[in-house]
Length: 223
Image 1 (tube, rainbow, N blue to C red):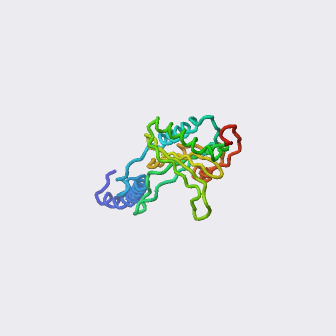
Image 2 (cartoon, rainbow, N blue to C red; image 1 turned 90 degrees about the vertical axis):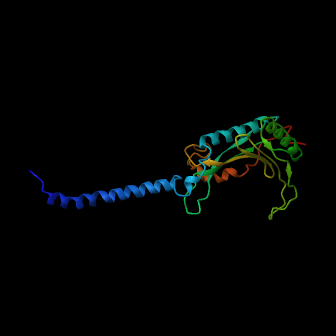
């Protein structure tokens, strides 16, 4: 059966009416995906950021190295990762980078008379491993707008960009490591906090709170 030119002409509007909405939906979905994944007009000029898995491992290594060099050895509480995504661009495009944090608190009580010795041990280790080491900072007696602090700290930056701080204050001593400019990969790269298995990664802000020490050590805990 032959189809007349008039019948074919009548079918074109029907065909276009079916296809054009699908094409429009596809175009909108593609544009939204590009916007959300750093391919928008502003976001496409961003640096891709450090691979999240590499950042995770670098932070882990920095903390293990710092705690491992402390002599006599001390135990620590294993705070998990905390990811803070960088603020959106001025036009609302989400940035594809984040800052990743992790904090370990020493379980051993460190007497204030040993703070300088502890800082010296870490500074020597960091220097030997190519870190850029900052000065020992003593904030004792400084007013933090709420109460005088007893804080001392020393920081260093590893060759692969991990910023590590040894902070000595009440209620205890902690090591915090962080890396900026990490590609935002959600939570799956970092896994779940073994101490809080029911929590999502972005709920871990409490992990940046120093845990009070509970163990006494013959050397570190006494003058």
